[in-house]
Length: 287
Image (cartoon, rainbow, N blue to C red; front, top):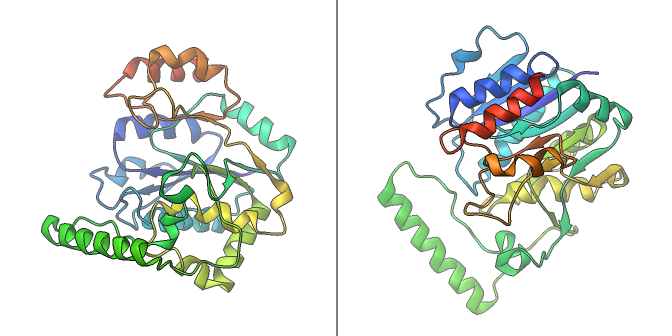
């Protein structure tokens, strides 16, 4: 069974290299490096199981995250992967490679991600709908002055929309949202790619939206004929509650909670904030 691990990365090259070194022996690795990133893709030049692309400048909230993820999915599909796992360069596995593979092989037709129909009570902006119904600027910062002006104009536009109840027309589907990270079966990926090719207006409808990576894939697949093969489980340990960051950057005091979770991976880690937890997780995986 050929399992592709898709990684969105932009910083901490040493941490990314350690992550890839753990996974590359048993998985095919596909990395999208943020086009703004200073990480040199040549660090993976001699790795036969690692493919690197650098197609998009990625900003938080930007639709470019969706585009970068789609490029990774397409690349992995071209390499005939049987299963697809999306993580970030700030993640670490909390199971050994073979244990992850064993769990996937039990139900290879099942996909996993976190989802909830919109509106979500725990999401601001009208439960997430204003991410789609209002016009949001494309989040780019090549020039601070022009970006600030553009942001001001779009903010004014959104205020006008709210005052006069001018909402963008949504597609006739049930919208879903959740964490962007997923585990997808080959069947799900085939459906996703075919749908986008046959219905280009679906992707186009997410232009000028906000944080669409948390809605796009969920909505497409949960309105599909294979939704009964999707389980509401992200298979990751993520702490949105404790802070001070959202999500929390995991530290050594989180170790017991991490390893007792049912996740394949945990996020997020930052060796500059707590290198001890990274070393302890890696040591556990390598035992």
